[in-house]
Image 1 (cartoon, rainbow, N blue to C red):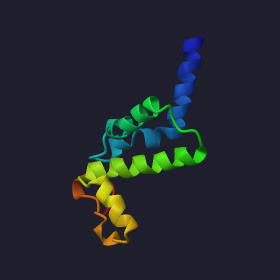
Image 2: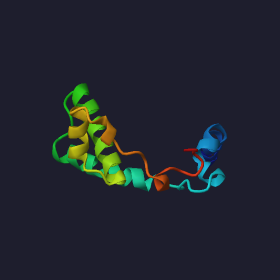
Image 3: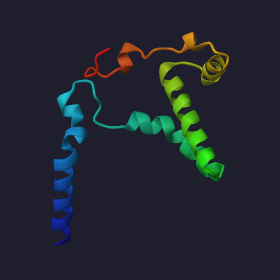
Image 4: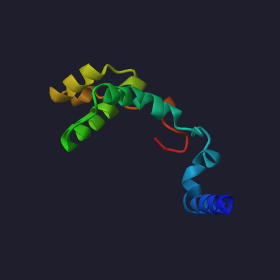
Length: 109
């Protein structure tokens, strides 16, 4: 009975979210995993563990924003410090656009 309920729950999820879960089957170039994203944010999970996490909602939000900036800059080959400094200095024309190879083939550029 337990296995049947697990199967039913999984079938229901596939029916509800199957289109999103199986996007990689419909669009060439879309990876079947999220390992790249997971690896990009791993350093922040380790920092949270070592530093005992955030103690406020504002701290959590700030960490999320900085983690996103850091991970995106790393993928694009941009120094995160220089990117943030240029942004704060008003040099927004230095923000790099995504490289063609980073954009999935299902997205028109």
